[in-house]
Length: 228
Image (cartoon, rainbow, N blue to C red; front, side, top):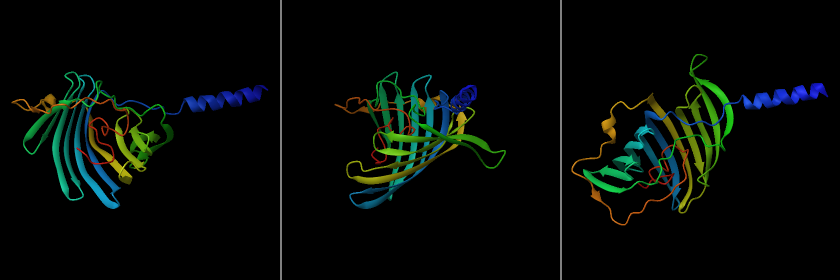
């Protein structure tokens, strides 16, 4: 009986010692290197390129500088979201437009509580970067995959998502590498909207969206289907 209690206690201790889902630091920057394949209206499509990200949860701001190519069509734009002001600014082709922020509250970037710890590995050999891998399930109700976060401070490293059919998109596979991740904000002016003020888009209402991974996709209203 005593031995059985010890075994159960050891098992519970082992489970509790596993890395748990976590939230990133409140301020960090990175370049998201993205590659995605999807099928739209029975046609295979690709989305590749980079998104420079600045994330400031302390001051409730995010900025994205997007340099992507959607099946031959370039997507070059910058998006600034100021949640305190409730505004989102999109700058593309020399034109700035102002809309409501996509959510009332800024989504904190976290591995959701429903994620499942998979393993801890080192990238780059025995002395390389230690990361925790988490399985992601029911992402926006249509996708699943895996995300790797640094074990020391929960910074994003990689993410892979596979989506089922959503509308006219029959399926999607998306891979993201977070390159050059640094904590803090090097230049706060990255969040400054252009001057003079942007043109306001009328009759655009704020929508409440789910939060969490995949990083930033839902924050700017884009998930798997490129629609900026």
